[in-house]
Length: 401
Image (cartoon, rainbow, N blue to C red; front, side, top):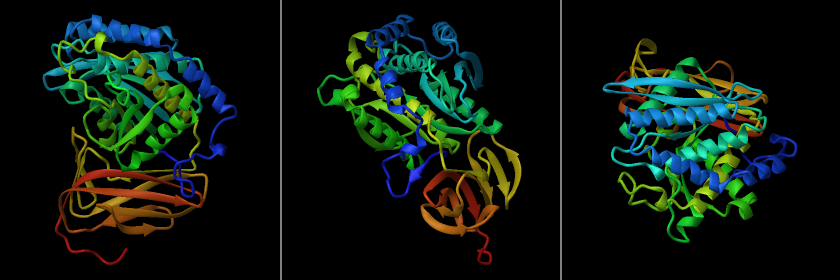
């Protein structure tokens, strides 16, 4: 939701949007990543043994992460969740910035039943703890949250509950950076590539990561292997609620994943160190960015049922179910004059708006799942937001709007 897409320079961020001495700051952050400490984090996680959601071992892992965050001086809390027969805790640590807008770095600490979870996702938790340890020594323009989820192996239960909580509170989330299974590489090719998965609205996050790889190639030695989004980890909970998210995952498939052999012996610490450098630097870069234009859908609200524009009740799930026309409203924040706001239906332009309130009526004949997108365009930048809806409309189109 909250990004700068430069129309003339699609893959570069203008220096005007970075703080003084940014390169030195990021170099320091990259250099602070400690491979031996990453190894220690992963080893500690796996030594708890198999720790599936709801187990005593999982609770002990949560306590370990909580204590590590607290010892770094971060404001640390538990977020408790429940879903059917499962319940658990997320561990949330906050590094307050100048703004309340947040960059959320995430990994999951529960393991697949029967697996000690060194790579899946001890490697991600190691990156999370390392990032918190390093970044807590600096100040940033935006707030950074470090969140360790449980319930991922049961369908991202912990993250879906937490993101819904943030959405209902109206929190301004700039981006989610999710790290899941990033420690396995057995070939030279695998050791030089990292996969990133994003949806359309989140491609800018891969652009930032690629910029970091290119700028600090001598320190990171990784290239991005880009994929379209796949909802196989906790980043999808953010995407479901219209937030922008990137999923970092190792390039080479780990055959030990979800087995008793997912141990430290099969984690490539050199590769994990490079990935961690990229993750921490990308987080720092985004947390110091200033954005000219930001846009989101104020209406329709996800997790709601509407009948012809009127909200009837809320749903536990993230879906927006709409009977009749969709009455959309875009919330645009900009320090530049807005030239136009574009509304899309299933990838096709459906209408424009040039003045406040930025609203549009989708009167398309439609059944079942569809996507709607809004793009706000200023003189020098643009931003987009995209959500999925379930729409049942057989009403004839109204007059031009």
